[in-house]
View 1 (spheres, rainbow, N blue to C red):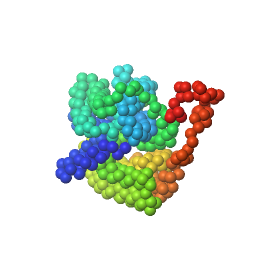
View 2: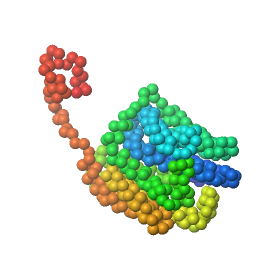
View 3: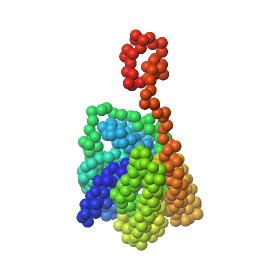
View 4: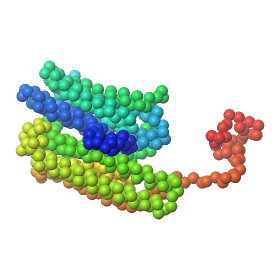
Length: 494
């Protein structure tokens, strides 16, 4: 699924500094478009809001967005790995016409469950009915946007998607800033909903244009939920692991309550969400360089097996992969480490820029969270490598460890009065170490896994005698006489 990364790499290798800059900026937008849109909108609204608006109204809007993003990522992330596997298989089979049918079918699926889940959750709050309806609609369209993001790596016209995300951000900010003067919280929701709907419409238009087909809607991806159930559980564990620390803190003594049932911790949420933005440059680098270069070696390894090269050559290809992974991790450590250090040293300025309010409380949490994000991004990249080689059990184990440790260590930090982000930082570091060691252990026996996992079928002799009656019997045709045995039967299909 390196896909669009190769186009960004061509742009980076064009020989100009502007081409290199564009490639990394564009790939970052592709990797984290909805996050960038949301944080740009919130930070701008903080700067533009007058005193009477920047109080409970804006905080209630933040609380709604926190829950909408939390549950939309958990909901879509649970199934998305299996859907991405389905997309990858169809691209490999050169059956890209199936992608539009898959997109429509999966969009219907996520629309139904998001409307049901959102309607139930928001119905328990004390907000006005139209606020509940708007929140449910926004939850639905964000779920659909996350689903559409899975298909973007297969498209060709990345410039249109860049335009959609950029213009969608401007539209969201403008509409929110204008409508909140007349409708308050409802104005924020309407403006942000229209901006997100515009983004999703643009994604849908591009997927439809590139993969247009007259085939009907397909729901074959449900079979992948069963066949690749380990990916479903891995997706659930990972995305729940990202949010479990927030759930623990939201239900502690540090929380504030908005709209009846929305518990949040303002200083922690802002510190962690802003720290997440620091991974965007590394995501761009991963798309442009790491994944594409790795995929070239990955493909060469399996090509050497398919072309029946000698064992020493195949083993050499495997060693190239191991070396490439080690070098990639070191490169990412340098890039993300530099970003982490800069953010750590300028924590007060960054938090103030995003409207942190009380920098004395928020900045220490941000400093600890930025350390956690450093290990988290490395952990995430290791799990991507695991999926390339189908080390699914190791993947599930790593994600479950992340979930359990993040919840447990955050709870310990809360009850003992430690830095609220210390649990997340420790869990991310431990998960990275475990996933790295597990990957190294599995990759050591890559040749064994490659050959053992292949289906074994008996080869037919070149001069085999084909007995049509035995073939018919094996196919379930019984008591056939010679005169009518072959009527309506395609022997080639059998």
